[in-house]
Amino acid sequence: MNCCKCDRCKMDVMALTLNNMDPYYIVRASNSPDYTKLEKEISDKATSAVLKSALKVRKNPRH
Image (cartoon, rainbow, N blue to C red; front, side, top):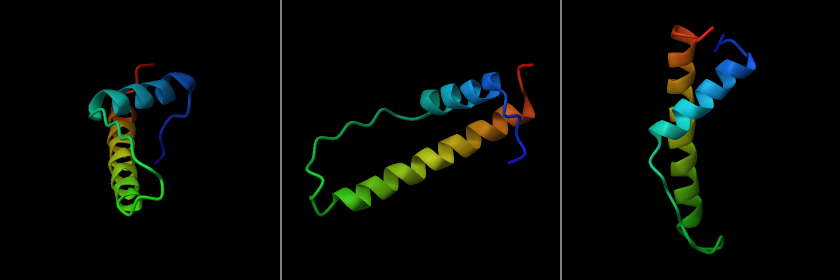
């Protein structure tokens, strides 16, 4: 994404991502039929949040 890869920018991306995601806790057996679908959904949301955070940090790095 052509972003700065310094430690500060990486930490900013992580912090923004975690601050912008809703907490999500689940207790379910990994062999449950809905587990794979849920795992994919969470993964997609996390990927989207990381991309948005990286774009925000790239636009306004704090260094």
